Structures are given as C-alpha cells and as structure tokens.
Image (cartoon, rainbow, N blue to C red):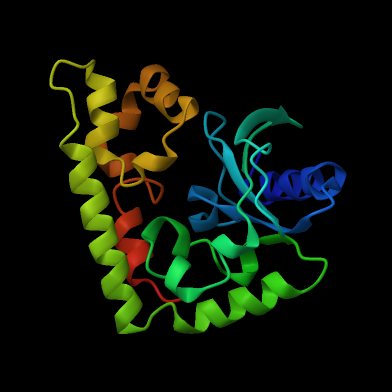
Length: 204
C-alpha cells in the first residue's frame, strides 16, 4: 500500500468515525507520513497519526491506536485552543511540520484551512525557525540523557536515532526488533534522524 492509499484510508476513517463527535472541527495528518511522497510504499510496521480537532477539550477522548482497512492508525484529540495560535504551534518542531493545508483530512467549517494557510506563510520566518531549532535541541538532548546504557540494543538505537521520542510507539519499537536493517542510520529516512533538521528549516 502506498502513501496515497494510506492517506485515503485515514480520510475514510475520519468520515465514518472521527467526525461523529458533536465538537468535531476537523482532522489532519501529523507525523512521518506528512514527509513522504504519495507513491512511496508505506511501511506496514508504521502507524498513521491523525489529529482530530475538537472545539472544546474533552478528557474522555484519550489517544488510541487501532487497525482500520489494514492501516494502523493512532488518533489524538487536540482542542482548537491548542493549535489556533502561532505562539502555540510554530515554535514546536514536532507540531509545526504538520500544519500545512495539504495535510488536512476534513475541514467542514474551513477554519483549519484558513489557519494552516496563515501558519504556512510564517513557517520559514527566522523567528520561528530559531524557536523550533531550540525546541528540537532541548527535546533531543533531554531524551538522550535518559538513555539506559544497560537497555537492549534496539531500544538504545531508538533513543539515538529518533528525533521525535514523544511520538515513539509500540509499532516503531517493533520495527527495530523485527527489521535489523532499520538500525542503519542511512536507511532510517525522513521520519527519524533528519526530521529535526527538516522541520526546523524547510519552508512550506
């Protein structure tokens, strides 16, 4: 299954299920899939991250992971207040890369498109590039300090090469266990070692 087909499966899940909440405002893709070309074969061991935006915070909507049409989907439910400000989004390297109009799966009111368009215009400004680089450095160095030197090798590799530890899931750890070649840093691709650099500096 290529990236385009995986995105379409994600879109269908939003239509059939994710949009049923009365507070639903829209949904968009986040994570590594946003950096991959549509004709790229999507790794079966990877999940697809979807942010379902709600008008109000709802503690009952916990992050969840499930299989839909042979695609492993992980869903988070950020409230609108978490994404509707440049101060909130553009300074965080893990968020900023996803807030592009092309990543929107559903936008009934048009507010996501309007917001993401405005954020994309400011993405490459020096102020926000600097903030994202500082955020990435703090996050990565802090995570590396927690590396357990006695841990299994593949778990240490996840720490060394993953630039997005907050998004590490059971599927990413399983990939290192079942695919030894995945520890080769030259084959890790845009979802790992280069993600920090890409998110900090690439213009939309």
